[in-house]
Length: 212
Image: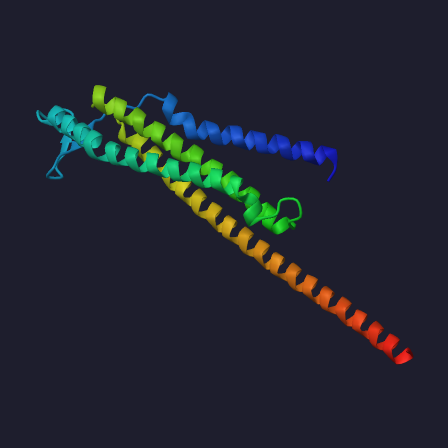
């Protein structure tokens, strides 16, 4: 690979990362619009001109803070803890899974992909948690804002983080399986080589005995 192609790849990846970061954080810097309708507990759609509209949006905001935000926050924090623990453990015990210094490209690439995707999952989950916190701020202090838009953004980030985590675990399993098969094959080759050497030594001893 020539130097110019490498630089092109580096610039392309950097541009893609900047674009992805901008798309992930764009809703944070856009003020949500005001609600014009509200669905109450009986699934009745209320317009902003209705007398019970203010009561409806206050009730929905309170429900969001007590249920959606509280449960999502706890789940996201637990998931972040698991992600960080797995990332640290996989790096600490990487030599047990894959011999970094002598591994073939497939298991080595699998480990690198696993670490990268775990980092992506951590970033996406943390970003989703930030979106939920921002939505909670609007719900608490400006219930008339369309904070559900930020909640939808957070849900997409959580789903992306879960998907990234799943693929990372698949890459780790494949990497470990290939590495295990390589070690088994190396052990068999070493045993075959030792048996061949023993057979050669025995043949030489037999020849010496016959010559004597």
